Length: 255
Length: 239
Image 1: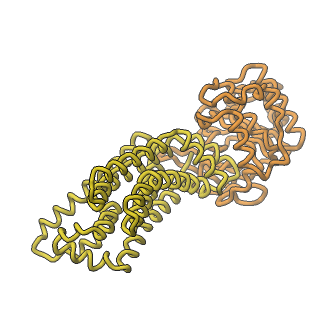
Image 2: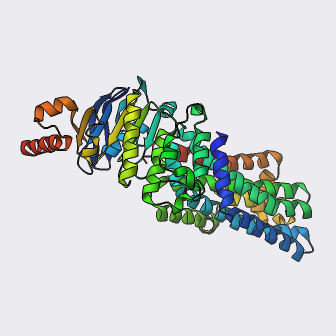
């Protein structure tokens, strides 16, 4: 297994994009914490940046990487290797490089300025988000032979998770404002890994008091240990399900 | 050694392979012949597991190849268009292939590396190589692990006459070791003294699979190209 991962990681590092991404995250994190004298404020600003940039970079980079490695994949497929092994090596290589980039670029400043459980949770959630969007990118890339279409689908998926989903939820909330929606909202938030990550971290900050009754219901559940573990498990499911689907498609793919 | 049982493959509405039955034995050198677009490459790719047939089964040494991958350690494959990672050098690529097929490491055949003089350009990146040099690299990989079965898709296309001759001699040499060689080619004249059997495929259907001597007596032609032309003309008339 690891002999293919090695070549994937070497290849990713050679393109230097991941190094640049680490560097940019590093600069952003340090400047955000230096600008605010209150680390809680800094954490909040960083949270919003992380929830935007990390999924975007992970999904676009991974999609393009998979398409660009089509030669490499073809070469490997005619060798005595399992298809599963080739595909998982791509996944492990990409998620290791991108989550390591996040841990060095944003995790290190986080733990320097906010050496608390909250800081640690944010570092974990950020790396989980990187891995989730690598898995989604693999699914987008295996679904279409056409590179432009595949990358387009990836961008739309990111737009959906980062912006459109929230818009839909607001719409629902306004339409059904006469009904108690707090509990269904908790379930619905599980359908978007970005939202779920945001909730998990926001509830650890004081600003959650501003979220009104919904915030109180959320805190009641996600604030507890059981709720936190549930949220993390849902995030892990967001890795496993797209990965399994893409693997099943890759196994049947003609090259 | 390789038995294809009733394999069919559709690409959308196009019928690429239409219930093909073929048996290939060790020690034979088989030419796959057919007009352009007759799905020869699809057939080869389904043996390699690159294309997954809709129905039917392929047996390699009496074991089905579906959900199996180790059998590929006994195959050396030279694709029609070799595609390689652009950023790697020839040397790195050779090292990687040896690493991936570690189980064959005691059985390396680097003859072509020297006869094609690829050893003098190990530092060249794949991106900078000409089409012919890429072909040479593909040929090197097909023969590198001394595989029992050689599958060569248009091996001499794009090679200069000298390299084509080196490759031809290499194929004959390997055939004499009792290996199974499958070749597709459009240049029939160069197959004349290599092949022992002919498989003729048209529109995804197997038209015939015969010994070359049988074909020669049937058509009364000594040259392969003429014998095939004779057969092709006959099938046209029958249609």
